[in-house]
Length: 78
Image (cartoon, rainbow, N blue to C red; front, side):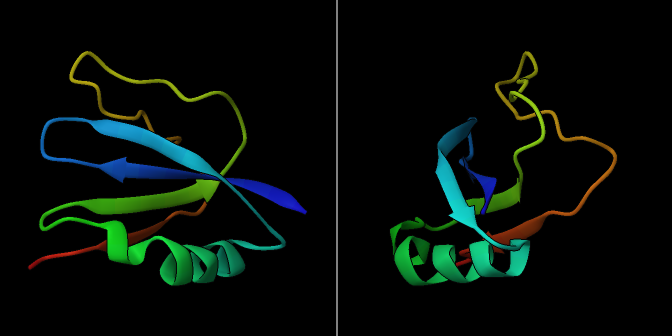
């Protein structure tokens, strides 16, 4: 099993929600859709990407993403 970050992106900052264990990014996305999607508030997003290294945040409290690799985004617009 692999580990994937689940990041909640709010208007004011990004927050590490949890680590999701799954066999693939697609499976991690399915887990988030089933278990966490309903917790998203209007205007928030989830970012799901592989656990490669410790997270870095910039001065605006936004996660610094690697230029390489895959990521899935799930958003609630309304």
